[in-house]
Image 1 (tube, each protein chain N blue to C red):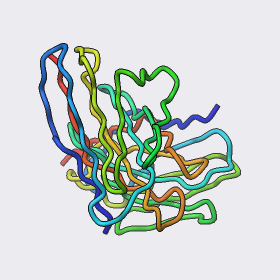
Image 2: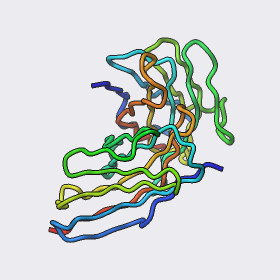
Image 3: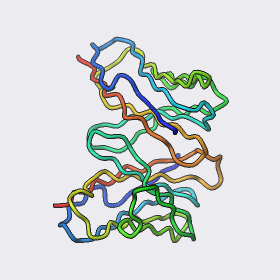
Image 4: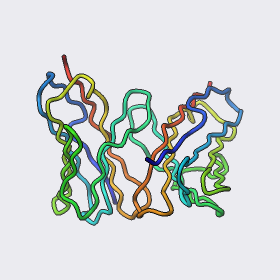
Length: 117
Length: 111
């Protein structure tokens, strides 16, 4: 079955540093990937839509200069949290849409837990 | 505004009991709906995906139904087991793009 991986699975960083999270589709090509964020005891909220070869589309209230997204290939999207602060501590999950399958068929990664100290 | 609501927020049942989790959504013109399981501190496990044209999907002890006209979906779990304890998330896709998630139902199955 379709598999999406995320790396790292867990990261702890100091305030002010930047962290890069990778989302890979392992056995299919994804022209579109989605980045979600989940705060403790809350549901997942879409942060941005990542499109291969073009700029990402950010949801209202999400700072594009703080959350840099790069989707340089059909199997990899990266989310970089720049100058991270404790309030950025969250669970980040990506999903990838198979370009050869129907819309709405997405596969979710296992998530990355970011803790900023 | 597109919203997904799950009730109850938490549910505790004795082992062996059958149970139903509820999901309601605004705007019946959905693309598809998906139920997920999330264990504490973990990612999402997809349980069942129901396309707009379908009324239900079954996998083992799980059955998900979809009633678009009333904006509702239910997840039925038969013969619950302690290993079923987790948070269950309902997510709706209206456009084929992003999913909108409910806040989940935290299920505890007591041995």
